[in-house]
Amino acid sequence: MTVSHRHLRAVFTTAAAIASASLSAQAASPTIWSTTATRGIAVSSLLSATDLGALPASQPLTVRLGLQLQNKAALLQFIQASSTPGNANYGKFLTPSEFATLFAPSSTQVNAVVSYLEAAGFSDIVVEPNHLLISANGTAAQASAAFNTKLEQVFQFNTTAFINTTAAQIPSSLSSTVSAVLGLNTVGKMKPPTVHPSTTTLPQYLVSYTPKQFQHIYAADTTAPASNIMIAIMAEGDMTGVIQDLRTAEKAFGLPAIPYQVRQVGLPSTDTSGADEWDLDTQYSSGMAGSLRNLYIYATTSLSDSDLALEFSRWATDNLAKAASASLGECEAFPYVDGSMTVDDMIFLEAAAQGQTFFASAGDTGSFCPLPVVGMNGVPAGAPLVSYPASSPYVVGVGGTTLLTDASGNYSSEIAWYSGGGGLSQFESSPYWQSPASLVLSETGDRAVPDIAYDADPNSGALVYVNGAPEAVGGTSLSSPLALGAWARAVSNNAKLGFASPRLYGLYSPATTGGTYPKGGFHDITLGTNGLYPATVGFDLDTGLGTMIVNQITADLSK
Image (cartoon, rainbow, N blue to C red; front, top):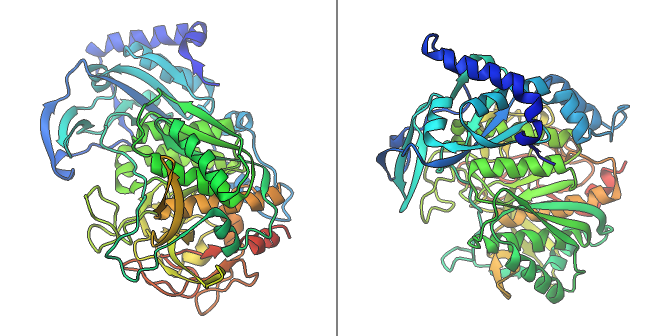
């Protein structure tokens, strides 16, 4: 449950009075400002953007302040202990209340931030239960003054948006608490990497698999369905048609009707432009899982970095679903610049400590940055950057393959899909669990993406029901929910499985030739390329560890 400032007014009265007096005194004593992780965005750095001048002072906006974790080193140690078989804390996870007590900002710190926002004129202030996000409504003038920044209107891709052209700052007294200020731009948005078969792509496989076929191909059908597990899908807009399509698909594919719940995050939206993506996510995560205790669909207001940060936070603080998938991403440079990378990473770290796993699509632009350029898909153009949130150390990034089967529908082989996202992050560091696999690729310890892969080529993709009719869909939008459904089966079989990454990398054994999988839990993809990076023996920047063989992974992780 979120906490409204109106319910805490008695607690904040004294602090608010102090903050108000401090603001009144600024005329005589200028504020000492500290810069946050929300950097300024130059209009010239935006593709095809035109500066329209200052954002009108009365423009309403919602800001979200990201607050800093406390005792981060201890939290990482806890995650390592809870993910290490044989450790006394193996399989033990924090509850959201335990996380808030041990690692979140204190009530005193939160109160000081809320008081500052109130004194600056913001209203409808809401503190998230994990104390990592505080939302507030105000105007452009109030935001400019409160965060000592300049807001400009821009015209880009036939849409009027706004950006902060200077870094967001906060009074130095809050510098140890506030990490970033989200909501100061409307150009930072993630996109679903959903693609459809191309008539020009060679070779032409043009196969559309069903959920049961994927179960058989990846050896999930010999593992018990995930009947006692709850999973989640990150979505946006109106889910009415998505639920109808899910029921249609379940009937057509001979699958059980999965219990579901739509959890609205923020203001409801009537947008249905991403329906094909959410159809793919829901039908193939639950389809690969075989059965579920419940499917949660988190629906947020927009795909802005700010709204998605709130959605990710709600999934973590609800702590209902053991795993989730977001078939979303954007060039990691932007969330680094606007500060959402800093905010989201702390949320994903909380989830990992609670035994939750977040899967994310690695993108469909090969080894290059997923820039917002119409028609660019998997071609050698742009900067060699990776997609976020797949590049977060606390997320399982899922790349793509082209899947080949024999005439009987059995697994034959896979090659790296030429458009599958992958590479080295320029902003994130490799976590301890990845180092043995990726050290040979990056001497500087950069985060390597992806971690694993699954089928993504739309020409060997999935048959998805969209608006009541089947159509062929692919992209790493497919591979991520497939991974979610596969992991759900493993977790359903072993309640001690929490955050997936340390356990999956624990099955990898480096060798002189590049790496081996002694327990046989992965298909090692050794052919193909995504542009700059060829698939190789062992871990690579196309397909990571490879594609999970579900029955073997489940057995290996149960030992």
